Length: 450
Image (cartoon, rainbow, N blue to C red; front, side, top):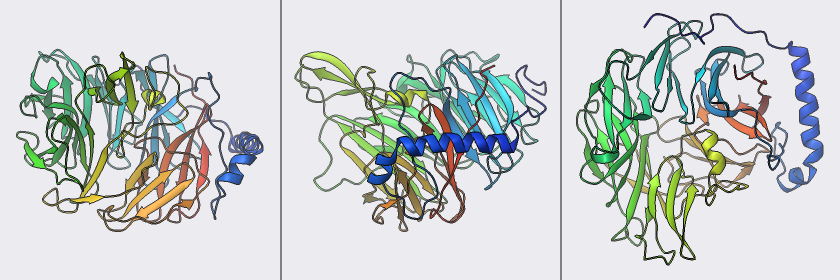
């Protein structure tokens, strides 16, 4: 475990001088402003300092996709980039994005990468998929130790979800279609050196897609069921109970599928999204079946021909190249993600003991939490906040910022927040130091996949 992987770096790679970087950034932003005067007119900025950004050019592939953004202080953070070649790179900053150093590279395939830093020194990177690897650092990423997740473990499958509550306690879902629920839950208490199989966390014909733990004991699942319930564990994943969710006005449908994504916000706060799908009615195009997540993929019929639609949900937390297909049919291009139909949002301030139906913004965007009651939502050029756990929201305020990538909005405290986005084929970060009134754009550096 202590040997450094071949692709790890113990030194900072050269970065372009600050003056040259500022010059390139200014040129790029100027071109964007010139080309998007019309957009600026339609979405004026009220007090925001960020400039409008161009939409992706049709047919032009991005240099890389942002797959994770993780800041632990207003100045110290990391982002992970994934490439079409199947590689990933982890970049680090200690000066709020003015300079970046490459710390880690490796193979990621198409399954994605999980990034979680617990403080300025300790962090975990997990490569998902059939060749899953976990990398750990205890010195801010200067050195890494890496170990294949299933090395010496008699399990066959693909790692579909990873969650670490701290540097030692972690969980992963191993997708194995032959077992109940489609996956087995594995737990580690030694940072990934050894794993214990806890079996399937769901009951009956339910299907589990993702696991999220807030501490060494409490965790939630993202699952598919025939009834509207969430799954919660209070003993580190050893056992799970179904948590009944209250119906919206008009009640829940009597039949069909219920996709439920539940996870903690802050403290004892919990948010849950429920997306319902009626059972298919022959080849009429009515109803559909959920076949995969993420992204939420639904199979139905269009004129008697089978098709698949991919959607986003309100609390999506996955930012990867797979989202370029969100809101599309059969993988065709789409200008913006499409929210899943028939969504209900619920919030709890007491760990899921009681719930309220909430009405957050419906437009695509990202959500973040500074505490259990104070939430932020940011969409394309718009911002809204809640001070009562998502029950009521302020009217939209224009910001002049691009649409965040799902799951990338991090509210560090009431004054500081970060999110990632794509400006055409360039990856960018936006940050605020004054509670969201003003935002600053950072154009991220070009990266060699190797």
